[in-house]
Image (cartoon, rainbow, N blue to C red; front, side, top):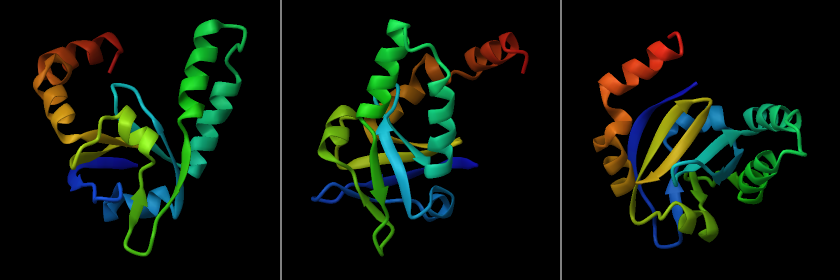
Length: 143
């Protein structure tokens, strides 16, 4: 399970050190793809396979399903940790998430998210992270 929030930076070549706490669970190789909310999602190969199996059960005749699957899989890249625990974030993914120099790497249960520092801080200041709104939504979900 992934949890926590870590401030990191991109080097001039677009590489990022993966937090040590996430490396073992992600594995030497893992999948990095376009996420929602203009961030990136990282999945272990096992979790990616589980997600792929779930997506295969959706009706491909549904236009929205096809659009989501295209979005999710077309942006996917297999990443491999180097000896220093870094990955190269492909340019297309850096562009999508508008990653600048500083970024946040956060654990979200079954995945890791990579956010531009300013976008993450803006997200946290907005209604998205309001404890009262989160509590209301959780109650609606029965949690």
